[in-house]
Each structure stands twice: as structure tokens, then as C-alpha cells.
Length: 160
Image: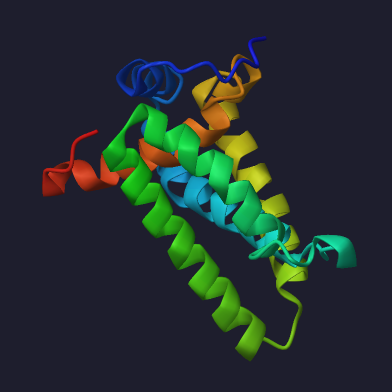
């Protein structure tokens, strides 16, 4: 298993991800689950308490995790970077609304949703008959959301 984060061309990574996601049902499950899993990870990171000695770092764990992730996307494609930064900002806005209006903690909802979505992904990969791509290369954890948005934005003429 490769865990290298060495730069690889985005078109190569998207094509490799596509090869593991050809079944229409698995694709549909990914269109739903992958962006929501990304949201859940942002939400869970945002809920981790920041120790007092690190509170001078703005944004908490979610914002600080977003920096290297953002650099990863920027090194592959400016378009992917813009889309993912906008999506991350949307995730944070939704999280803030949830904090303000939901009677349950954001972390609890995000955790339950993440567990349910993991089951959905497992079902999709069982249907596909292939293991998740990130078992072969951890980069695919970050490529999955880009693949989904690339597919959804292609009819609008957005290309990576």
C-alpha cells in the first residue's frame, strides 16, 4: 500500500478512482456519501477541544487541518482547490448553523452520520466488487470528493 503524498497528476488520480467506481449504484452511493463524509470529518475536527496553550491558533483543529488539505488540492489543480475550499467553507457554515439551532451536539450527529455513511460506502463497494481505492493509496481519501464534484460540475463546463 502506498501512503505517499507525493504529487501526482490529478487526471491520473481521477482516472484511477474512476476505474474502481464503474457500477452505477456504487457511483450514486458515492455521490451522496463522499461529500457528506467530508462534511462529517470537518464537523468532528471542529468539535475537538483545543488545549489552552494552542488557543492562540485561530480556527481550531478543523481550520488547521484544512491548510495542508488545501495545499494538497492546490498542487494538483487550481479548479479542484477552488471547489474544495468553497465546499469546506460551506461545511463550516452549516456546522455553525447546526451549533446554533440543533438541540443535539454537532459531534454526535456527525459521528452517527459518519458511521451510517461508512456502511453505505461498504455496501457500494460490495456491489462494485472492489475494495475502496484508499486501501491502495491514501491519496484517494482526498480524491473522492474531487471525483464527485468533477462528475457533478462537468455538465456546467467545469473541468479539472
